[in-house]
Image 1 (cartoon, rainbow, N blue to C red):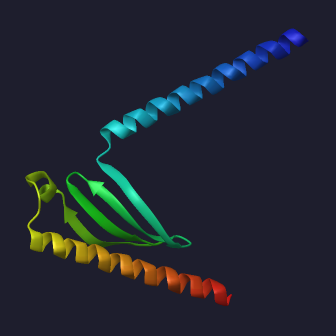
Image 2: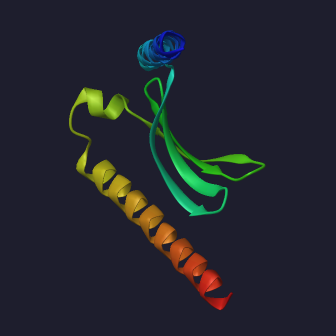
Image 3: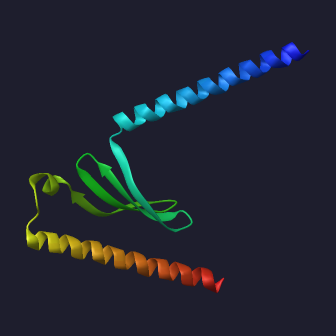
Length: 118
């Protein structure tokens, strides 16, 4: 009887090991061949948020809800590859990032107020 339990335990360990190896192999394959890469995600509530996604050389800022996706901003990486951006262009990009950051802080404050009222 003990021999049967031992064989069953070994078979279970082999199956679990094969599943783990298959998961690792799939993860490595997905990382190499992936066209899209998730750079970051900021939750703004249940099933709502903002995601930064890299597709090729382009970085997309996307608003995500349970039923919809909306493109908020599209940034091209070619400027980074060409070298330093022009000072006026760099200042404009910093202002855009600061504007988005301020909007996110306001949205978080509104979310906190809504949850505090409940």
